Length: 369
Ligand code: GDP
Ligand code: MG
Image (cartoon, rainbow, N blue to C red; front, side):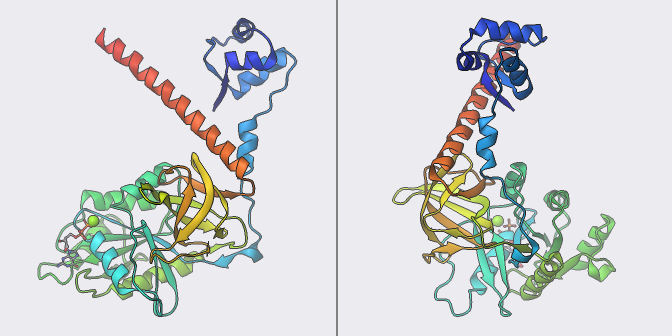
């Protein structure tokens, strides 16, 4: 990371920019006045003038550094599941079937809001949270931003088709993320379905499912008739049990942004997944380059809730912008601090994009010549 420009550091120390530039030059570093200096250069240069550098950005970000939880504070939490697979193999159909069939027992109304994630309760009372983002692009986008939200991946493969490029891609994404896979061999209601062929194909890729003497779970399903879906969810729960998923609900919340948009009437609506702690109304949230006080929270059933614990998907109102999918969110004690960090991050991002643009322009010119 680079911090302030040569000119800015000159102003801070009350010396001329030329002096900074020549100090850098004597260190063998060529800089221009608008160039940002990295931490090491800054420290050395400041030292030359008898100053000590304090990295305020780092200090600010320290406010959101999470402490490790004591084992006794950890409570079991629901698994967070992503459904991936080749186009048309039945991801949406499966998610829709689960959403429609598994409405929390005794709770009025089904899932009415599309908020990018939803939680279902099974007969045994266990919960599963599904990330319901279009395709697996969201998963990849989130992964690219360093967000690790998925505990288990369901990879859907149509039994009347083959193991396709996007199937392989999904498998390698899950493997790269260290996320266990449960295969859903779909469309078994079709006369042309051949689940054994798919399992054989997986075996050829060194992925041995249980029927083939391996350890990877798989379930034949029909997202159309619902055949095998409960069994699939039970296998997901079994996988979750082995992962022994836990989180500390008794602290300020943190987690990941699933999606965010601007609603004409309500302002910015952000769906977040709480991963640690409990999010409450009135909390000061920092999410990427946005911040704000949580004014209202709503679950996927449109129900107003006052707090949301680990593994809960929740849609919140009150941020001053739309953070990006995959951005981390944190609750801070201090509203001002949240604002400051958000502002600092936007500034860095802006400057980065300005520099990138300039770079591209120079490049273009070079090519034209
Ligand atoms: P996605 O692209 O992976 O989200 O796939 P969709 O869920 O949109 O399904 C693609 C097509 O396959 C749709 O026409 C579905 O109705 C159909 N489909 C999905 N699951 C099944 C199934 O289990 N059986 C049958 N017969 N058709 C299915
Ligand atoms: Mg789809």
